[in-house]
Amino acid sequence: MRALPDSFPDKPDDMFGRDVEWMELAAFAADDRPGATLGVVSGRRRQGKTFLLRALCEATGGFYFAADEATDGESLHQIGAGLGAHLKLPSALRFGSWREVFDALLALGTDRPVTVVIDEFPYLARANPGLPSILQNAIAPRRAEREGSRSRLLLCGSAMTFMGTLLAGNAPLRGRAGLELVVPTLDYQLAAQFWNVTDPVLAVKVHAVVGGTPAYRREFARDDTPADTVDFDGWIQRTVLNPASPLFREARYLLAAESELHDLGLYHSVLAAIAGGNTTRGAIGTYTGRKSGDLAHPLNVLMDCGLVHRRPDAFRDNRSTYEIAEPLVTFYHAVMRPIWSDLSHTRTPARLWARSQPRFTANVLGPHFEQLCRHWARYFAREDIVGGFPARVESGTVNDPGNKKTWQVDVVVFGTGADDRETILAIGEAKWHETMGMGHLERLRRIRGLLTAQGRRGAAAARLLCFSGAGFSPELTDEAARSGDIRLLTPADLYTGTLLARTSPSARAARRPWRLRPRHLARQGSRAGAVGFPGRSVVNCRCRRGR
Image 1 (cartoon, one colour):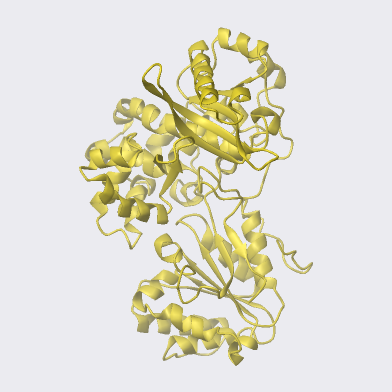
Image 2: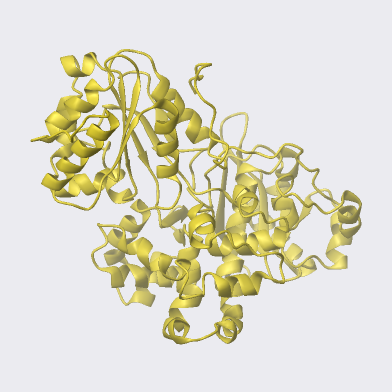
């Protein structure tokens, strides 16, 4: 990451998190080298991209233009009016083509680096599909207008299917960009801080509903946050289940906003299948009444949109499962869609919510807790907890020929040995609404024995992780105290060092024999991982020094 000049302004005080994104954008905008440069900023809607880019333009005196859904001619008129106002001209500039527009934008950076942002770029490209090619020619190497400029041009958009292909393959702009930044959702720890939730159980519940999308608190819920676990049911009824709240229809609008999703009924059915626990392609096909081979395209499109993730099986190369990336979409399909008509016409959703609680626990909270446990194991767990440095964390299935059954493993932590070969560090089970006892431990031990018999590297010494939202039996607690390879983990451990109110160390030590030491320094930077963007590092951005 390139260091910022001393004169560059700090991140705005009213911006939560986004340290990595601000640093990357600031370094790009402050680059003093000659020659105009191009950057691409993308991410799902409501993540704060516009807030970031407007703040950047305000800090640097740059030009910001937000496109509308309009004809090509009207868009030319709008950007001419915007540029004229930015330059404090007595009237709007008149452009006859986008080549003239880009040359005018390049001219802004004649004397110094100038940030130039075109937001909602997919709207412009939809009206004029040749726009990427026109821009390619405008910033072509050795072109005088480009070489004599230090404009820092940033294209931004939320249509992930379009933005994902802007720099890919044989696209006109491939190789032209010096920055490609994906703005992710806030991870579950940052989301708890953002929502001012200090109780770890409540934090899991809130994240299972609204995830880490910043706008859902500020604009959609109007800063209505649950006061405590008792208020959680009331908060759900005031916000997500309230027909007058924007959150009520947001999950439906997320699909409608993607231009590549033509058969919305099919995509809703696929998401409903996954939310209902049908996570393999075959199970999704059975639920939707489609052949599994016919689902390749809709699943790929949903993955391109960032709404669905594919998770490979930890132990079977030919098997994978799918999970919904946006918690609100899961909540909608598991809880709201089956009673949509009743929710739309009821005066109070209290009775409907009470009837939906079993579905919420089984289809939303349980699977979401498993996802958080995997995310924690991959990005936050200390090495002494999982037995080494985690290189990969998945779920998996293990065949048990003796009992003629298949075991599901919620958490499988892999590391890399000195010879660069993958080794199993730990296996774990996650239960949200169930007190874990000796039966769960014996199940993990059985699975560990099966993996050892298969010759899986590291299986014999693998740690056994028990994650529970409801606690542990006295027998399991005593066994963990005697054994050195068992770890008992609660929601509080997933949030260690990040929440304001912490259970006292003495109380936690009395509750179970082994506990985590708190992290005294909460991570304030933005992170993306299994819950938001599986398999990606801190933030998906690539900066290239060459122009």
